[in-house]
Image (cartoon, rainbow, N blue to C red; front, side, top):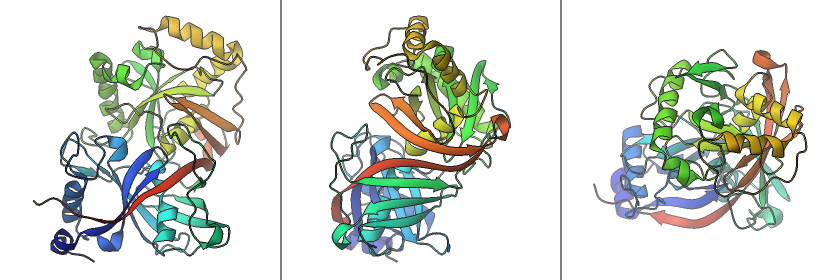
Length: 397
């Protein structure tokens, strides 16, 4: 274990990686201080916080590029490695472990193999990852032809302009990972601050709201939504109340729950989304956020299932057109609908969650229905790429 003084003098081993649509610094737990306050202070100085540009560190000046993965061998016989996610605040001197990150998770298995925690096993290697933030285990499958991690490939994911090798992620045990139950409030729907919501946690606490309930279409760009101060204030009012109802307590200083506005799909998917994370709007959607949203689609009576039911009965293009005309403003950008095909939501089917830069496919296997629905497993495909591997130095205190 390195002391802070040793790290300030000699630097610390670090790999900067893109995981899904996020980017973060990956460390071995053994290389970081054991005390949380010293670790967090060190990470703030490495990433360049607090500063909107993070100009004096390796952070990217945005919540999606100011992330950290801490990886270690697991003592759990059901897992190979442990993964702790840390969100480093950009403009504030704060580090949060209140949530995990499924995008950064995509880089954990490659990193673990590169660092020798897991040996390559043929053309593909399966790595069982214990998610420390909240629980659950994800099994990642990585391309390891010729005995090393292969990052080059032909898989494209929305939000990343270039292809890479696929990393498949299968989740188990994520139901209620943070809040303790799939429906943390005990209800499929709750009226919060005068707005109908569905609060769900299948790996990520999310509050779903029909965009029309807030006077928007759900097709606005992230910049448009971030520029709407009235909307942001209302979303935050709902979030703070939802945090209490979901058992998260006072969430003013945390990044959960995420707030997802849902609308009819425009590109033949299952549902269109815009997600506050919680104050900036995601340019796509988080992995476990998408899994939670897709799970809500399968819960009869939820805000999401209601939108999907409208699409199935009326056709996607008709519903999208109707909702756009009902909104407070005309949506800017976005691709046109490819028709009015009904959306299927049979458990195990691929559910396509549309977002500002494309779509996110996920498969959810469930049993039961409504408030009694239970999740068996969830699966997604991501990509990851190593950007640099070396040493990084913190700024002075």
